[in-house]
Length: 452
Image 1 (cartoon, rainbow, N blue to C red):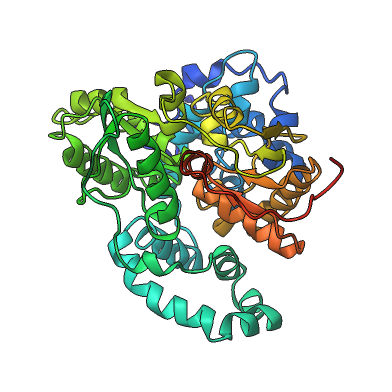
Image 2: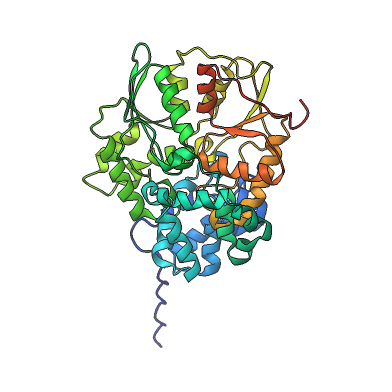
């Protein structure tokens, strides 16, 4: 009697374009050290919403043993990409590489529901394009000033229609008047003896809603002996699409940004947003398969420095003055893509501690994500809400009178939950605080938020 024919292995739903690497998957020994530090696992409490669980799913998808279903995709969508697990893992598992390989596969092969597709299309065709977003600021400004915003929030109309749109509206800051125009010069001379010639990334959300941070960054660099070059034609760094698996869009944006800085002759390229900086340093990986840009991307990434990383390395030359007439307790908020993605933690703290009279305080669970995570708080508002509440509670518990935040997404998220708790404490970028200290600006301060 003939033996039965062998059953062929099931086909993987992933294609051959860089699926998650089985060798990297096999490095995970399922020890569970990642669980306590994974924000999605801490909120949801399910094994498959942890790094360990997702790696198990990646392996099953690679082997064709697990379908690319709505349930499977939901566990990957719940990942914030905060990379706390990478910092924690005793085996050195490169979860960052694994999730970065998995998300493009999902976007290419999983047919999302119509509403989800529409909302994601809105995000990725609007937020990374300042020139598309800027004309919408006029009606948004009218919406805020007319009282319509108070009505919408009081009646919770958007919550009933779309929790995702409600989350987008809730984090929208007050539109500054200078957001309607570009205010940064293309060139800023160094003050005193020039030490470096640096290019400056202006970002997309940062450029429109936090232009004051860009202006402060340029002034701080200039005051510390840097000639600052700011190409007007620069676009998005690609962080938003790259973190959500929109690889083709991210590659296009990366090439354009490389082009805009390539002939500037700068020594370094500095960036003041944590998520942007992490992506910029990954350009060599993002464009690894592009023969025309591969080496150019590596050269570009080698010049990228977070502005705090840069200033701590080269040293401050400007004289710093106190920000208040009394000792000033400040809490620094670690942005995940700075702390876990770029391993930058001490540098911002050391810079802040050089401001006379500033007392730096440390929050509980400093390494836990605030829930912003790029556009995560728009796509996964329920998990993001719990994380935002926890983060703000921990920051307030320090009794600090100011919060320093090095990333625009974190700042928006923190401000939202400060307002919901009726707190008037202000959030500043570390570069703004250094700028105030250089210019001798005294800050108006709210009452202490806790025991001092």
